[in-house]
Structure formats: structure tokens, C-alpha cells
Length: 69
Image (tube, rainbow, N blue to C red):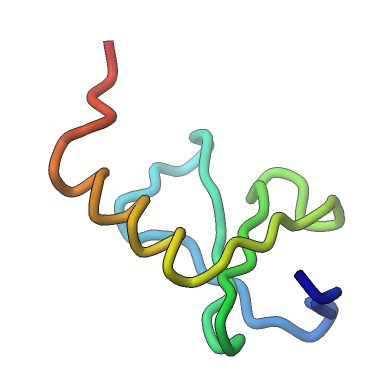
């Protein structure tokens, strides 16, 4: 996967996120990939997932495949 420059990305947090919780942010708008970072460490590294893999992950979450225990 090519290097992606996320220095000017517009990061967004899910509306389901709770204040002070364990949240992630995503940076939509990149062709073919979805950058993801820890909202508590905005200066830290970002993971970059292929768009298809990210969509599969979101679909699995919505289907309840990762229920908390």
C-alpha cells in the first residue's frame, strides 16, 4: 500500500462515541483507503485500511459480529 499523507486530513469521530471514551477517528475522502487513528492521541500514528476491508469491518459491526462480553 502506498504511503498516505494524512497531515491535512479532516478527522471525524463517530456520533456514537462517548466523551472520554475509547474512540477512534476516521479521515474520509482518500481514494481507496480509510485512515484511522486513536482520538486520544491525535499526534500519534494512523492506520490506513483498504476501503473494502474497512467497509467489511463496519458491516460486521452493524451485524453484531463483535459483541462486547
